[in-house]
Length: 151
Image (cartoon, helix red, strand yellow):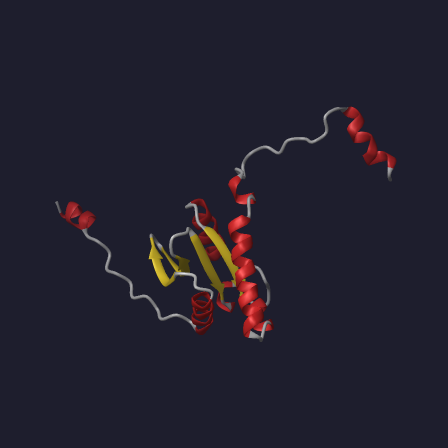
């Protein structure tokens, strides 16, 4: 009986942290581009930095704390989150902090964000199954001859 009571309990809502300045700046630029969006959206176990309204598009403002120290490799939790979010059907726009800091002019940042959004929406690589066995493009044994001919 006690187990049933505990099982039905809902977890208390976690307070959402205020947006970081990086996220606020990106939000301002999206507003300037007239793109409807929400900041710090909770979806399942994840809290997304920015989610575009009307589309399954997530903007990840990758701060320095989402990478291993001194590298450009994402920490394991963020990599897993990205894979799960893509499996949920969302497109992900990656904006690393070192790219953002290099761009000082507002117009260049706007163009960078606009093009990152465009490439994330038009990317077709995620639509093919990852576990599919790659097919060989060679039709017969003569197609392999060029590999040895040009060595």
